[in-house]
Length: 160
Figure 1 (cartoon, rainbow, N blue to C red):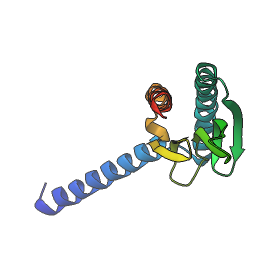
Figure 2 (tube, one colour):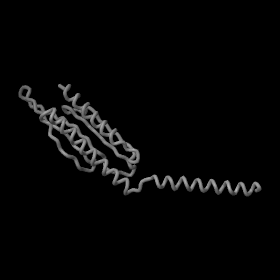
Figure 3 (cartoon, one colour):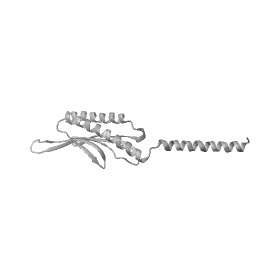
Figure 4 (cartoon, helix red, strand yellow):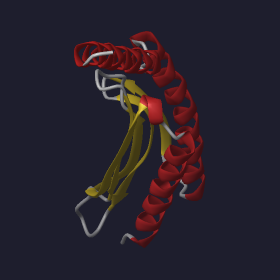
């Protein structure tokens, strides 16, 4: 076999290897519909978990109301309360809330959870976490959300 034949065969092998890699990548990549289905399944699981956690927060601190959120910012829950103080003759109102939502499905194919906590009219934290749908670790999301709720409870208990 002369040099030209070996060069031609090497080129053909390289092209076959490239095609094989591309077909593997295409097989691994999720279709748009599969991504939507995955996001929906993860969202449902996380929303149930978020609701249970915020219900526990409301039990720990009487006065919090629990509401379900379904809007253009996502799905989730919020625990909130309004307090009114009457120092002297002037009324003073304060609101506290913890809002945790799963962001809607988007073009980046990620699962994202966003939390915002407010205590006595002051935002005390804002957290978010996301992962690609193909790499989601649902237990990690659950642990993070639990940590955020515990952090909020500690901050709320310490507030004046």
